Length: 343
Ligand code: ASP
Image 1 (cartoon, rainbow, N blue to C red):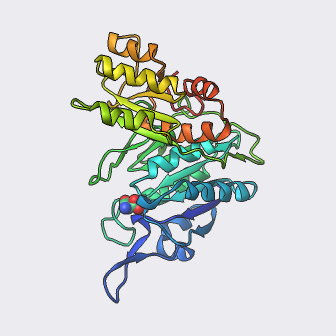
Image 2: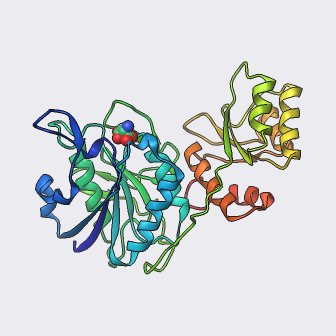
């Protein structure tokens, strides 16, 4: 496996090491990577590193950070076979979703990973995650192309599609899942790739486009018993809101009370983009199944099918950044752009 890989270290637990002097956790100097993770010497991989300054806890991630990351990948794209992004786990699913939609014409791997325990601690999960992410980023298919030309998350032996991943545990090493999409690969003695699930390259492998204009005027409404008219109206009809992700029950259902549907219609008449995703991790929105779902559809709500909220947020930021035409955005929202929905 001969490959050039760029490791982009953004921050997060993985990059922490205990300082022997004061025993506190401090960011680790990734320019010394081969000394710290000697296992990497076993691969025929040329590794370069790029460290964000300042390093960030991923709870501080903002769209501006995604733009920096996407632009860095665009600039370095011709010179590397793949990219490994070391990132905190808290918002990794959001960042992986964002990059999935922002990078256009991607034909090389962009593999996010991190860890639950710092790389310098004895039981760390960081080394395995990191070493396997590098191996995956460098892996070639039988005709010499990249094995995984996608944005993906590698964690605890599983490679997940970036725009399908969700963080499911604040404690277990197995912190991520992609409930509606099988893993792209599983690591055991060998790394087994599922070539039926992995998407085809989207571009020529020479250059990529980046959507850097993001429109972030999105609210997320989690429907719940006891939700009030005032709260609903504030979220759906607020002047600063262009789109609302409605997290509904089960297969896309919400209360059928007249006031609830009236506010949905009012927001639709105001020209807001309303999209329905389910609070369930598994399964999909189907607004034709129950009368309550049908009422939402008739009131102008579009289906997010089985998109995660993280993916829907990223998709809206990107599509709304591209166009002021809400009808176009609503149409494309229901299309499968990056493997984020099962259709
Ligand atoms: N708060 C940390 C972060 O997301 C947690 C982690 O890396 O696991 O940056």
